[in-house]
Length: 191
Ligand SMILES: [Cu+2]
Image: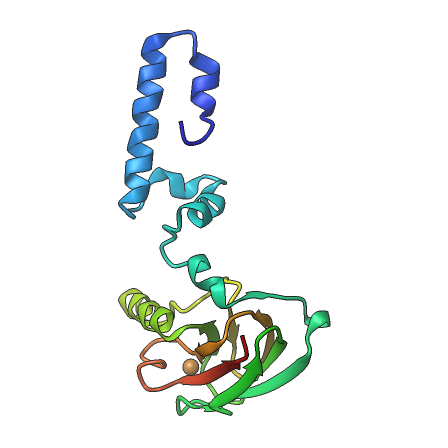
């Protein structure tokens, strides 16, 4: 099988049990590949399996080719970004070099919660559709490429950029922060 199955190891002496276990495993795998919710989601292996299969529902590990989270202590520099309630970021464009580790220090002087999600434009658009489907107040991320910033707060995210190109820091709070233009452009230069 693709991965160890504890059921198999405890009942391998009975052929019928083996067949049943294989059938269950096959069903679970089928549910996974279909991308539908399944009992597997409640198992401790969820995150590892999701990363390996690339089938994560919201998680975007497969898009992290552009970089990786890093420790704040390793940051080359700090870029301060202000998130405004009128759906703008200040600044709305930054330039970094491939290999640079940046701490995004995001300040929210407004009245509502904002966030930044780092990623390529297509990922941002997909993510926005997911957030709109979930509805207001659902933009709560624990993804490594995202931080939320409550009203009056400042929060930091440190990221190493490993790929040249154009990316964004987007706010997907609902309703419609991103759709109203709440994103900034990250130009990553170099090779
Ligand atoms: Cu926002």
